[in-house]
Image (cartoon, rainbow, N blue to C red):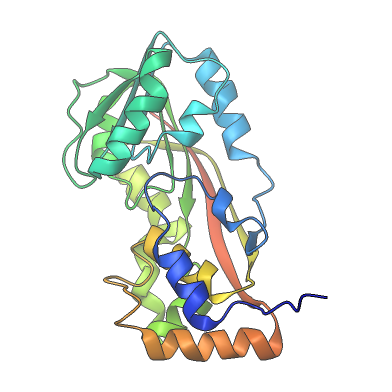
Length: 259
């Protein structure tokens, strides 16, 4: 009978380090990491709203996977993305369905006219630029998004960076985002937050996650964080999956019809 040898630390890290990171396809994590999903079913709800819209903009679309899951697009459907590999991936996915992908840095003004869209969407924007969102919405239009909340996956982040002050994620707090959206002239229709369990079953899943979600540990490379990776590998082997918690909030805001 052949004996089975579990992958070594070096095997797991090398395997994960070689996986492409463009797009927001997380299928590689199957069997290696899990994350609970928010109760509101963002992709499904977004698809329903797209089906009723006439002109829609998806901000920071990634590889276009969430937008592309919608069963029907409005007559005018546009997406922005700032990272070149994702622009190419989103273009290949969305152009055949008639959507236009615009290469635009995430921190730049939106390259569209005032009041161009009746629906603006985004899943996990790095930052919501509320004045720009309000500007491109038509009066009566809606911003519908799922945001990353404060201190998301900080159990993992702090393993690599050490303890971080509470205010580190202050601008991601739902109350602060509500205030910023209202300052931009938007009315809050719905705002819900949830804290969701994540499990990392091997160190390869950690490596791929940190390379893919680059703002978690800025500048992450395997070589730069080898001691932390090795200690976490040993911890997972002895104690089982590493548990962290993501934070998400559903954000629906409306531009007043009388603007």
